[in-house]
Amino acid sequence: MSRQCLLRAALLAIPLVVPAGMVRASGERMGDMPRVITHTREYCEELSARAGQLRLAHGRGPAEAELLAAEGDRLCAQGQIRPGIMRLRRAIMLLRAEGTAPR
Amino acid sequence: MTDAPGERQAEAWRPAPHRDGGAGGFFSQAGVRFGMIYACLFGASSLALAAFLWWSTAGLLDRQNEAAITVDTQGLVDRLAEGGLPALIDTIEQRIAGNIDDDSVYLLVDSGLKRLAGNLDRWPTSVPADFEWTDLRIDRGGLKALARVHHEELAGGMHLLVGRDVESRVQLRGIVADAMLWAAVIAVLLGTVGAMAVRGLFRATLADISATAAAVSAGDLGRRVKVTGHSDEFDVLAETINDMLDRIARLMDGVRQVSNAIAHDLRTPITRARMRLEDAATTARSEADLRQAIERAQSDLDGIVAVFQALLRIAEIEAGSRRSAFTQVDVAPLLSDLAELYEAAAEETGQTLAARIPPHAMVFGDRDMIQQAMANLLDNAMKFSPPQGMIRLSAQAVAGAIEIVVADDGPGIPQQDRERATERFFRGESARSTPGSGLGLALVQAVAMLHGGVLRLEDNAPGLKAVLHLPAADPAAGSQVVE
Ligand SMILES: Nc1ncnc2c1ncn2[C@@H]1O[C@H](COP(=O)(O)OP(=O)(O)O)[C@@H](O)[C@H]1O
Ligand SMILES: [Mg+2]
Image (cartoon, rainbow over the protein chains, first blue to last red):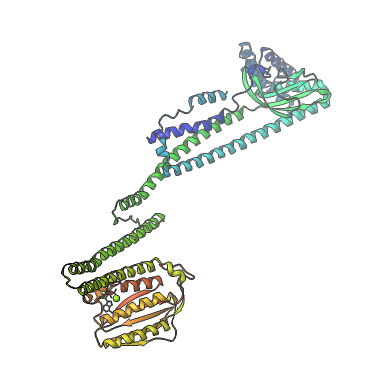
């Protein structure tokens, strides 16, 4: 008898708690939302080109930057756009740091 | 993202419907109620705490985010002022290119809301035109994301959106929601355990009291509540109940004794009167005989009436309704009058009455009652002391009271009878041959009690010394009523 009551009390308490976790669950559909357009093969190529420009401007960067850029190109070519873009961005940040760092 | 499990949980945790209606018995118990109140308070305070934590942590993240966005926006506005639109567009593109975390939002549109630069495909339709800050839902690589966005109007009717994803806030919400769920579960568990414990305590402490009350109402007047000796509230309650039961038992005893005594003591005179009348009816030879028999029966019945009157008078005094009529009474003249009256009666039987009365003796009470009580004591003294006996009546002031003493040199009351001598209908062994019904001292006792005083029966060696102790001032004034 007491175990049943305990169970019932626990179940009754849950509706008080759960809505807090799902307040934002509803919303407009994906199609209505503005879309981030930097997840495309074209953007990969744009970033790759930027890295090339930076290399031209400041000379070859650290080995790590070269590695990241090459890996980014490869991932983009394989269709893994997001990881590729992330590595290319890292490479660009490293090359930029090279360009602004005092020699 | 983290919303999806939340939805699934909500599905799985829908409360089960109530099936049995027998829960009322459990929840109507006082101990359980207290436990539940405790659990509710505990749950409410932990929810309040969680809400506070949520708002303070999420608020901090928001403020940090907004500060970063504001700085970012200011940099872009400066770029526009320095280098014009091409510089602004270039800077935006550089920032997007360097956004390793892939969490930023930039959008520059012209006055017709046509996109000029940035990583959003179009101006959001779901937000009002002139907002400054908003939470914006965006589609980031096929996943929903929530971004905090700032809107800046630029020269030439252009609009700039700068924002950051706030997924960490969403995650935080999940953590806090989990914590709140666990807190609620723990609160319910603790509350249930507490309810059990409180209920057990309640049962244990109240069980004996209710068992005793049940036994008493079933007729076992001797049952008493156990006193644990902790001298807590329950002990005080137990003692109060026991005192109440003792008093009820005493009153019941008194009632039983009195009714037994009435039945016993009045049967004799009533039977006697009846026999006299019967006797006269069968054997009387003349009208004079008959008349004599009737007259004797009449006086028997008068005696019975007198006993009833005395009983009623005692009951009236004990009820205490006349206490409101109490005044300051000087008993000295009252005692002098009584002394004079009884001196004359004593002379007839050869007894002597010696009175030593002060000029004044103030008592707070009822004059008639005191007179009646003194008359009863003097009656006894004259009735029980031998011819040539000496009776002393005196009064003196003692601390805050007057003591009136009637002393004789008769047989006195043996030690073992003194306690019972003031009970209704009590008559000593030696009093069997004297007239009386055993109500005299009962009335004196009732008068003494009503005045907040006492009647003491002491050994006069030989004889009896009856001391009536009456407070000089109102015992109720300034303190509680003396019962
Ligand atoms: N002065 C006294 N001397 C001896 N016995 C007394 C005296 N006063 C009272 N008693 C005893 O106390 C009993 C009760 O007295 P009381 O109530 O006045 O009844 P009653 O006078 O009708 O007998 C008497 O029967 C008697 O035995
Ligand atoms: Mg008497």
